[in-house]
Length: 429
Ligand SMILES: *Cc1c(COP(=O)(O)O)cnc(C)c1O
Image (cartoon, rainbow, N blue to C red; front, side):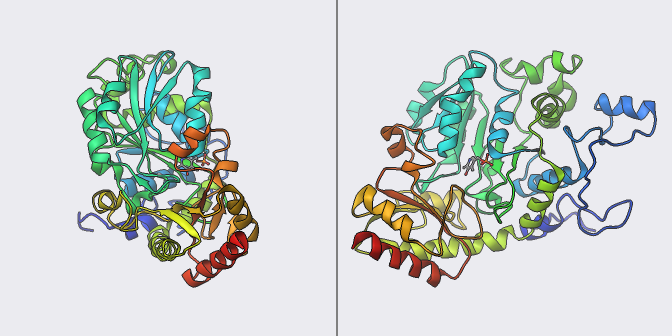
């Protein structure tokens, strides 16, 4: 074998996997086992001391889940990746080693609705908080940082408003203030965008969506670039100082680029327990093998549907960065040149009432609170996923009351358009 780096399409099939050493099984077996037998007492001690990498107990690591983590790591171009039970778990796991009571994060106003709720409400129970800023206003972003800020958080392609974050510019601010940039890459996937190449420190993914691609399981992943110096500022003692929760191991001095990943396993998964199970990892491993093929079709279909909607007189406007009319179209060329994803919104003439009628009249589309399925999905965000938000937050997140969100699937584009056409007729009659 040469040292030539393998391409994305190869890595999505082979990354993290080799024929099973015990049986030769070509597919990654589902290691449905809670615990793994130690060779002897010394082996057990070496594993617990992180001197040797191996399997102890499936709350921490499991061979099926590790294969998926290594595959996602290869696709994102990271130093290490940890899988966990959902995308929301991944966000908590990403923040956990960085935060403490009284600490805050700066988050983009353009985020998945559930993330806005997690950051504006739930993390307060830990004594953490979030300040929401328009990430197009770099001066405001920098001004929001204070001595207690520990991370900057955004989405590469923001769900659901057809927004693309200028990752290079945001990373420039993060770099200047010496803080890690965390990028949620769920809507783009590594095939459309590789946030680490644009300066991200950590990448979080909800594997529930495109990575699995078939709407079967929830899961999440945190990929560390391995490039952030956790010791430089003294602001990240869980990583730079002796960690009392792990017999005084100083993770960053001892483990360097793997510090965050080992901490996430040895302390994060061990004590928070947000573990991905091997059966779930199996479904995602099956899906991820075809990620690039599916994303290519998702994007091609989304462009066709968005163009058709934009030209339709029953439609007020379409927010999709893949359209030349989008203010974020230029950013697409730089941040995600293969396309702006397959998730966008459009505003129906006739407002809230027409949106609800439209949703009740689609036949091919499924009305569900999900995205990134092979199937085309539709939802009225303001009355569902973004219901907990104020109207101002809804509008900022691109989920105004007159707006419908589509997750374009990989069916025939003509069938997707025909379904929207008949539902728009019913909605605006
Ligand atoms: C779905 C989603 C999440 C949350 O992931 P779960 O797996 O549902 O917990 C986070 N961010 C984005 C962009 C999402 O689409």
